[in-house]
Image (cartoon, rainbow, N blue to C red):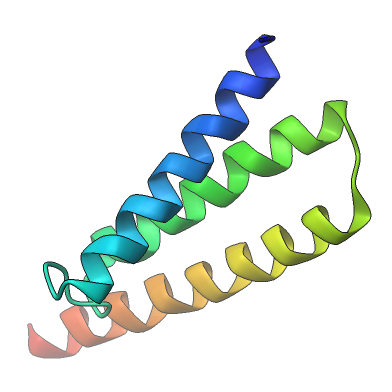
Length: 83
């Protein structure tokens, strides 16, 4: 296993753990941590895909990253409004 494979696998772990936590109601999807871990997971997977390109995987991870960034922005706005 090469370094980029380890990064990608770590990214998958982040995303899967967050999804399990969401499904078991152990994390609120509105929390910044949820979106941060999903974004970091996507970035790590995208880095690994730069070494072994797969268009479909890049597409889904790119969308996952964009959605995670949107979630971060919403959480930040909500936190800022609450004062």
